[in-house]
Length: 202
Image (tube, rainbow, N blue to C red):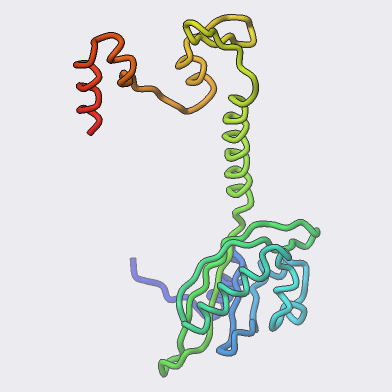
C-alpha cells in the first residue's frame, strides 16, 4: 500500500485533536502556541496563555522548580522532562508529565521548543497510596508489644503467642535468615564455637 502524505489540514487536525496537550515556545522562551486540547484543559484563550500566561496555572509549590528546569534546559537547548501540577478549567490541579524538545528552522537556526504533556494524576495518586500503605504497615510495628521474657514469643491481638519471626513477617516485608551470635555460640559450644562464628563473619 503506497504511503499517503498528509495534507496541511490533516496535520493541523492531528495536532489540534491529539489526546495530549501541546505547546510551542519562541527562541526567547515565551510560549506562542497551545493546541485546542491544552486550551480546553485550561479553560482559557490563546491570548490568556500566551507568553508566560500559562504559568499562572502552575501550582505554587511547583512553580520555582518548574521554571528552573524549563529555563536551564531551554538555554542549553536540551530535551527535558518535568512533572508539575497545572490547574484545570474546573479549578482542580492535575499532575502533568511535560516533555520539551528543541526544534530548528529549515536553515538550521534554533527556532524554539515544542512540548507535549500527558495527565499522570492517577499514576501519582497510586504511588502516594502505595507509600501511605507501606508507612501504615511499618507503623503497625510501633508501640508496646507483649513479649515473653523467657522464650521471646510475642502475644498478638487475639491473645496467641507467636514466634518473633512469624509476628514481624506477618506485619512487614521483612524476611529472616538464621545464624548464631558469638555469645550464644560460646555458651553452647565453648570458646571454639565463638571463634568459629567470628571467623565466618570476617
